[in-house]
Length: 102
Image 1 (tube, rainbow, N blue to C red):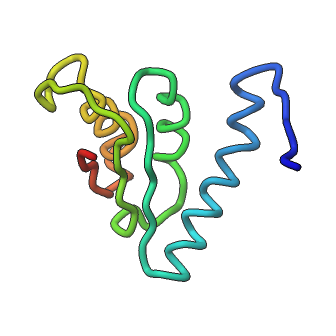
Image 2: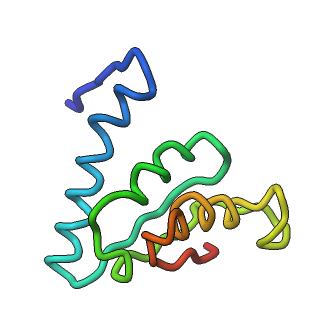
Image 3: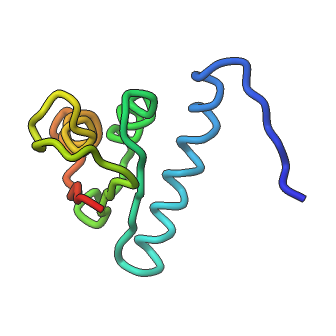
């Protein structure tokens, strides 16, 4: 049976989740030379994106894919692709992976 974890804050959740996710991405890079990260859009995951963008990963080996996307131009205010590019892929010039549409 899966373990259910409860968190009293978003910060507490991120403090435990980000290192696990970074470790999984790093393990995939080591095992296969690349990793895929499939994310949902919207503003809810922005704190996650911002923390991941600071992770010491070889982002050139990580492909970021959207699980969902609105049918709007990539530079539109409602574009999930734009949010991922701004807050994860291009954040502070550190993450270099590709954001691709599903």
